[in-house]
Length: 257
Picture (cartoon, one colour):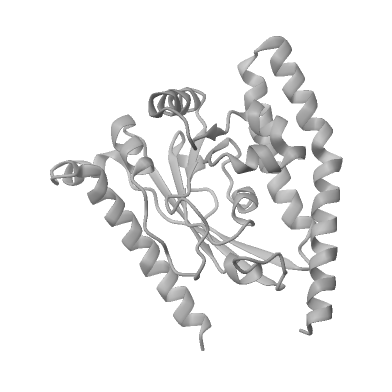
């Protein structure tokens, strides 16, 4: 694709995405105001559903540019409440949560989405998305437990930031410590090829396919063998990361031919 065509495709893509975001923004503001006025827990649930619909509808609208294939999308529904872990390749990854079937998802995020994604900030706040950056650990844990009581799936990106090389980064321990402490299943969500659609450091779109695969849940009944390790949450982390390495290596090898 020529540079001119690449830039034109990218302009159309982001124009459509931003237009759709602003069209749906009033729903987020309405839910935000309703929650402020009533404090009703059910409105949090509606806001999480709205966030899921937004992610799915956005990439459905943009299907001429990016086609999403979803494998085993119902795994988290059967294991909720749970912890979903996802590798992080591009800005598309939050939208890809809409292509697994669990509609009550609550990402644990850095601060920038709340500051920069202005059309979406009200619905994220209402849905109870947990802002983890620069905050007290006890407060973050308390909010996570509240979401668990609401039977939401907590979503962690264990790498903490997008991969700049396309390689799987080092994992942080937060998701695995929480799963062990709260006895929650872990459902790994493997994102394949989103980094090739929007490459690190650019906003240029390269049309093509993205695949997500929900791996079989790691159940609390399996945790005893990890608890026998000197550092249980790190042993669990290594186990889950190895699953990602295996799946991503197989995918990359198959598509390198």
